[in-house]
Image (tube, rainbow, N blue to C red):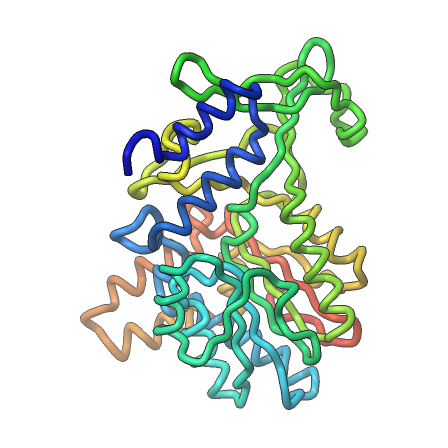
Length: 349
């Protein structure tokens, strides 16, 4: 790719012609370019997600899905839906375990990346592919799992200036991208509890995540089913910029080389739950990943794996620690459980 073809060069031309662009546009275009051009997962990629750390992660989700389905009356036809399914590892592990309990759903993946679709089709033969949730069939209960999906959706940022709230934009300082405050007053877009915050305070919102959660909540209400939303984030909304970049398993500057690193932000689980509930879905709760996995029996599963393969016992223990320990993924990552009206309560919440 020549310099004239890079996303950075296109952004520079756009900013030079029309002025600063929104953080939302910057992040959305950068991630679209990034995911469309590569497989970013695993040791050879830029980051490792929980399903790639250990099969135990997907297995616990498979047990939860099978339990919900069974206590809901074991409907004959059910849809497994996963937006952003990575390499298909979570679905493969979850569906393998669910099948032991009689749950064999239709599989529907929401994926726009051609390279990832090819990998997913190999991991889960027979999967159906869609560009967004709205294209998935709506005539059967759904079991939806979204793992590290919301964090990559583009956000808006607002910053408090001495003149009031303004949208945070991306401008140029020479050839470098830098965040700046816009000129249009945005006070009306700020929640009342934050309007009097100190200058320099940043708040984030994610209209794209709200749209996804609206669709999920509405579908649960009309179709029946249950959903797990898994990501890193806050149980309650917080201030501050959480925009970050991951490249080669290390933190990078999000304003350098757009489209060449994974841009993510912390998920506001309180808002996600409220949006789904507004559509009639039941909120089962929000739990830390470590607590949820332990409630589902991951420690017993780890012991069984170590006993069956003593040579791998140390690796199993390391994976268990990474997934559940408070100073690893156990507290920062969270599970949001949702269900349709009339569906049972979910284990682990």
